[in-house]
Figure 1 (spheres, rainbow, N blue to C red):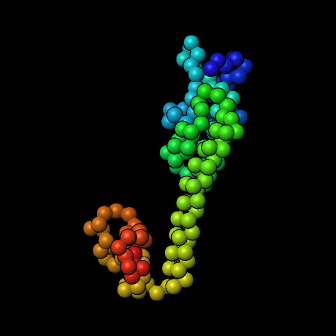
Figure 2: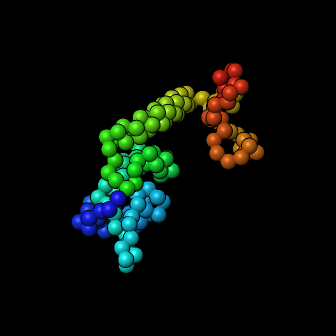
Figure 3: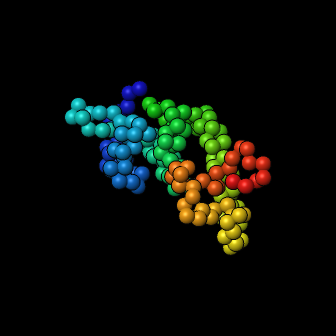
Length: 157
């Protein structure tokens, strides 16, 4: 698809319009989240529609969505033209399921933390978080007691 020179933005223009640093524009380009065309002098030029992609990236980042997750979603959008309403609807539906799952995970974490903070027991037999003498370090780094197991019939994690 050919773009008129007036449709193309420099790195600085994209950064200014999107409210981000020029280094962020280059980073997003290097990560494949946005795509530039190159001038004969090897300068990057962006079609105006990359501003929408950057808006999605920025909104997602504010809510803790990783760039890898954003990349997966943006893969469903055309890189060479302004996305159509059909394009947006398709990725919106796809992303909705992921966001719903994340919402459920956050609600479970909130319930766990509320129960623990409200309990105050620090019981070695019933508390799901206490780990005396770092006994779980043998299982590797990261949280261990808060990870649900499939064969956990007693409800303990």
